[in-house]
Image (tube, rainbow, N blue to C red; front, side, top):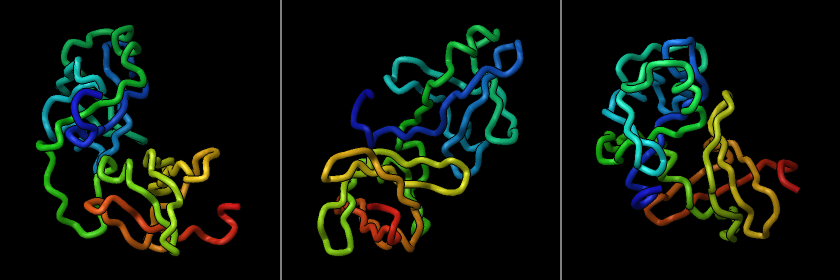
Length: 173
């Protein structure tokens, strides 16, 4: 990704083409699905392509958008999987307690309740039932998904570079 990873925030990802006139389905990573179009033109991960949303409507599981310059199904299908980013300085400052941008969490060290390194957050996933922190264990092996709840993640300090995790008994061997 161009520049510092924290200079831009991923607001969504093109999941598929919609119809035959070039519309795309976007899986938004915003609190309100329509906010994917709120902060101006979007860019791809490399920062080399720019996408202006001309129209947008919400649907079950996301939004359907018409992007400037995408006029047929083939062009829309070619965008499948493209992540859509916006410059961080176009987003509002975080003011609500306990709410973070995913970009603020990725890369943080996860400490267990004893203060030992549990791992590093590599992604924040959401399969429909709430956010999950994907953590690469400090001891190696496959990544672990932990619910991003106050019970499992009782303390978050992005400025200090860590989160405190308390996995439920039996969740991790």
